[in-house]
Every structure is written in C-alpha cells, then in structure tokens.
Image (cartoon, rainbow, N blue to C red; front, top):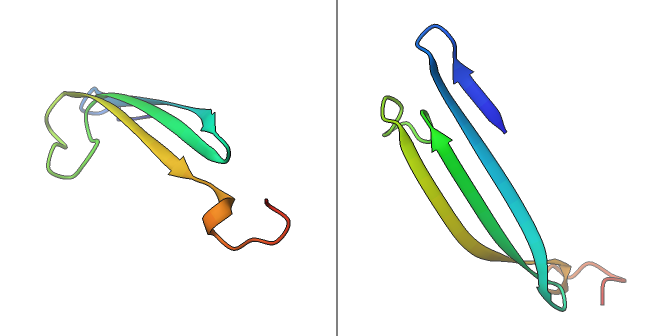
Length: 66
C-alpha cells in the first residue's frame, strides 16, 4: 500500500506478507516506512516492522472449513 500528501512531500508505504504456519494458522509480517501511519505520528517519519499470526476460519464457525 502506498499513500501520501504530495503538497507536503510526505509519503508512506506498507508491505504485508502472510504464510502458512500450521493447519489454518497463518504467520504475518508487516513493514511500514514513511509518514502518517497513525494520527499521533502524522508529521514524523517512522519505520516499523511487525510480526504476528492470524487465526483463520477454524474458530469462526463457518461450515465446511475443517
């Protein structure tokens, strides 16, 4: 994802990647660089790296997703 304010020359970019860990659990990696990631940091140039996981349909109660 790319976004920005050309009038202020403030831009930001985000890269996301998910991958299977085991079963229906997926790993998640995210990288953000630029301005405007949050309202608190709207005027600060930030660089952030995140790790996590997502729990897919096995807890959502959706039929046929076993």
